[in-house]
Image 1 (spheres, helix red, strand yellow):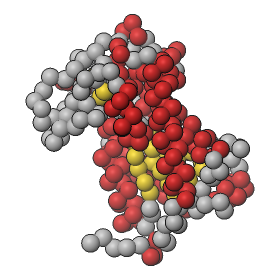
Image 2 (cartoon, protein in one colour):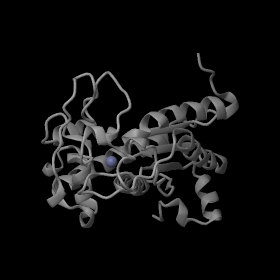
Image 3 (cartoon, protein in one colour):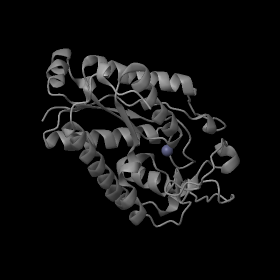
Length: 269
Ligand SMILES: [Zn+2]
């Protein structure tokens, strides 16, 4: 089985791939602080790692698939009080990811997954799938990589609610498994949010009320969750579960009936 990295193909190879009605994956990350113990590139690295591993597994199962390079910066104004954060505004972010998707579509890819690695991007990507469809006739899917493995994550965790949020038990374990050279466990410290129950505190338990808040207001060191519970071994288990779950979706997406052509799309009610 050849490469699953789109950037490693020549144009005739892409033409041949398109003839197989492939799945295209666009990993989308962020460039922002992850506490004193993790680097800025966590979200970009983790979603690209899961995307490539899942694509390789799907390819081994006979699925035609190609992954674009990761979109390394995202929507992170809530982290800009910390040094190093690089953020796009919402319009530029949506235009950038949207034009990557439109380029794949123009090349002939009709099964596109935007695989997100940053919570702050999620609402914009949900919205983008709608505008790409209703304004441009594209059918594009978006999901955050952890959402494919929520039942596993719920069993896997050792922290109480509040322990999986940002630079947390989950992200620290995934980094310890994949880039141990960049994890400084001696600097990791847990931080649980203390705020009224209406506001979400955990990836697996959101509150009903949302609103903007700078991370600097919520956590002095930029961590929300329980990074001290992370180990490389538990991170490896988790990344395997996430990879399997995403691969299963890629295989299923390739087998779904061909999307309707743009002129045959249904109109919203
Ligand atoms: Zn992150």
